[in-house]
Each structure stands twice: as C-alpha cells, then as structure tokens.
Image (spheres, rainbow, N blue to C red):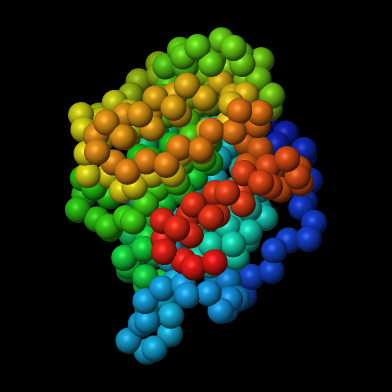
Length: 301
C-alpha cells in the first residue's frame, strides 16, 4: 500500500461528526515553510465569560494559544479529520487553536512534519496581537503521530531559543521507532492500531532504511541527550494500545529530568479514541483532558 492509498482508504472510512461545537470562527490560513507553504486552521471560541487570562494593551482579554498536530501515522489525516476535536478543544479550554496541516510521508520524510509544526508555532507566536492570544500561555499538543510532533517541537523550542512554551499535551503519542516494548506484543493486533501498522508508519516516515536524522530526537524525543528545561507535560495514555509502554516510559523520563508531568492512563480505551468524536466512549477522557489544560493554562471554569 502506498501513502496515497492509505490516505484514500482513511478518507473513505471517515464519518463526519454531527453536532459540531460552535466556535466564533474557523479560518483557513497559509503558513510559509522551507520549500513551500502549508495550510492551517485557526479556531477562535465565542466569548465565554470565563476569566481566560491577561488583558492586552487594547483591553481585550487574551486567550491561551494551542498549536495542534493531528495524528495519522505521519501518512494520513488532515484538517478535516480532526475538525470536530479542535472545535471542542477550543471551546472547552477557551483557547485559540491552530491546527496544522503539515506535509505527510512518504512524500515528505522525517523531520519535515516536525519542522512544519515548528514553523506554525513561530507563525502563530508572531501574531499574538492579531490572534488575541497570550504569549505566556502557549501550548503544543497532538494525538498519536501528532503527539510525537508536539514532543519534538517542545525540544525544538527549547533548543532554538523559543518560542517559550507553557506546556505540551501528548495524547497517545508515538515516541520511538523501536516498537519493542511489551505492550507491542500484548496488543500486536490492537484495536484500530496494530504493531504491524506502526512499523509501516515508521517506514513511511523514516524511509526503508529506517535511518534516524541527526540529532535523533527530531523523531525520537526520548533519545535526546537531556529532557531538562522542557515545558510541563500532560501525557494521556490509552491502556489497550501498542504505544502504552513507550508513553509511560517517556512520562517517566520527563519527570526524572525535572519536568512537571501529569500522566492520565485510561486502561480500557484503545488507541486514537480520544479524537474519535463519533464515539461517546472517549468523551469522559476528553473532559478530563480539557480540565487539565484549563488548570495548566490558568483558565477558570
């Protein structure tokens, strides 16, 4: 199967969510990146009456900024696949959400996707006045492969002297291409995500030789020489998931490096359920995530 085949198959299976959360605006924008441009969608919630944050010079309350990277094995999914989740995230956290349509593998190998998400972070961080966002409350987030990109971009922001991040949210994140933890054996056949599928995704992203870039943390954040100085992390782990163990291990690595970490483990949920808006089973986990992010970003209920 080619990357294009995988994208077509995924599109064919998508069920558009109903009762989408209403936001004030969902604007598609274009962001310059090395070698071209990418798309993004900026979600701005309605005024909620919440104490969302600091006042701007003009007197308007500034909201948190969340730069979000969608999952999809680095190969598929897009702005539309995660539109429902981003709407709910924006409304529930009372934050401006920038969802990034990063370039996909195998046409664009690692670390292109991470560089694209970092470029989107730079783009948004240069527009706090325009977006009405608070430069002291910027968070990167992502699910699955997007969680990998959020973790990698947190390292990029630290090592490239900004932008400063208030947090990172890693939702069922892909952490390492080794695919050798016990949970890969336990859930090899998986629900929705299998061990074989994960190995195929990594092959698409890294190439057939599975060669890591230099430095390796551009795709495998746990292999960084140091994790010290990274922003506080909310790590969400689904129990019935090949990725369970590497998620737990990375949370432990962050904590050992002195990074504040809140780990939420949902033992009975399978991979990806958090962003499947048509399934009710993930709603309680989403509500807990939103509450955690409001606390981290200092948004009152």
